[in-house]
Image (cartoon, rainbow, N blue to C red; front, side, top):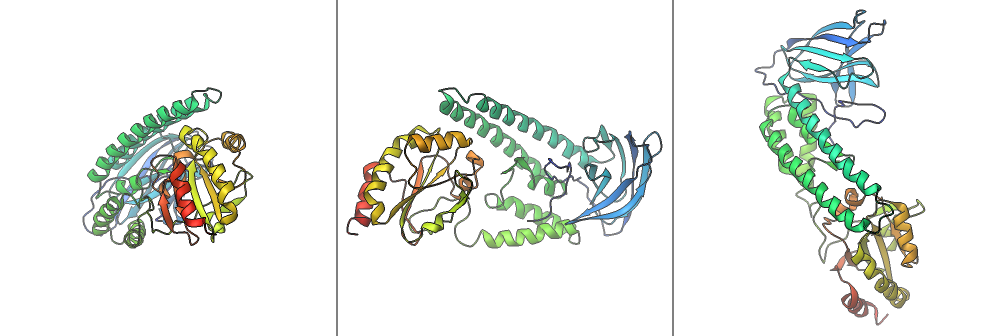
Length: 398
């Protein structure tokens, strides 16, 4: 994956890319300046300026701010490039600066990542506006999560989850659509690199390369034509080259497997925290079942799975259940109450953010894949009598 430039990096902060939209003619190096005030920085500490490149921070200059916190830097860049102002590793501000720009910064010590103002950069203004809207979306999603967590003891929790899930999907869909428009408007700007690296929440990408490759192709084509020698653009160009190869070989990530496909391996923790893999059951006919404690249809099918397991296990049948629960307590209690402990169970407890949701293109549960002894899909979503008939057909003579 290409390098992600940190915007608000800290011990508990997601790495972000901070960019600016600027068109530059030619390849001549141009001067730029950064000046302003860092409130609380006039205590003899150094303010460092570093250029951000893929995998490294290259020192450029350093100054000691005045007692009132004022500072200034002058340097050069050949094309829009990222520079980091920092007092220490946890207190910094990242800007993307084009030749000729005069940046004015007003910030405070220990909170430089959230400056009071940054002027002299239209691209920075675009990014700041986007981030404000992004923060609003994250806050709304967090409110839904809090509502869910507050309903732990409510008998209506499964139904509440469905409602909250729909609301969350609406929020995310609306924001993604707006972000696509912004991306297209800024496809020839470094702002686009920032956008394609964004996560709405940890584990949930704004744009997924496997599902939205055309957006990555668009950004790569536009930026590579403008800045073919930029380290960041070259890094993106290399990533996109690999992406083009990956999406043209076999089934794309996110497409549900169909009969005849070799089912991808699943490697996740069990309730005790030990890592289990689906491939460990190779040589047996396996039902890979996606379920959750909060899913009534899933729970309704569990007694049938217990019965079929008892009937066919000795003949080579096994079950590998993957939970989409959020709380381990709910998952473990459901396993115990439904008497499912005889077969393997795994989960990363991330609900719809689970990697298996993307990997298998899941849009609803229950969902299941019956695979043969070599791991190929035989049937999809068989339940009840249909599943028993298929197992009888496969295993009755063994």
